[in-house]
Image (cartoon, rainbow, N blue to C red; front, side, top):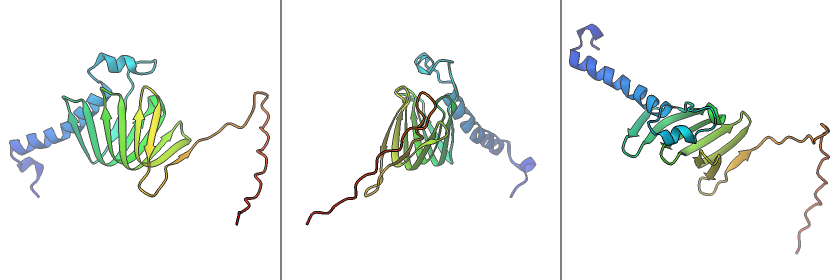
Length: 165
């Protein structure tokens, strides 16, 4: 390996450009150029959506960011964390598509596991699809206290299943 001080200027420039791509992609996510995106966010203005992955591509014309490999997404404004093999952020449509071993954690305790998940940002809605011959798994924390602060009564026992011959 050649020491950095012996590298030609062209190689140093290429290395610098390679470092700038992730920074510019993060800037495109955190500071979108459309006013519509800024006003469509929840009250409080722009909030960052951070995506980390092995590889990222940005299509400026379509305004789509594609992240591949060990994708980790953090979206504090929606109390959302996600991991997947691939994610695509469609800034015009305000939609995020996750695929490949998707795990989403929302509000610190509700979660979804699936093969593919679409998150519709403005609706706050998830659409999850499983792998073939599998199921989607969702875990939701339910508050079982009523208005007076008392614990709700347990559900009645389910009768035993009787098989018919």
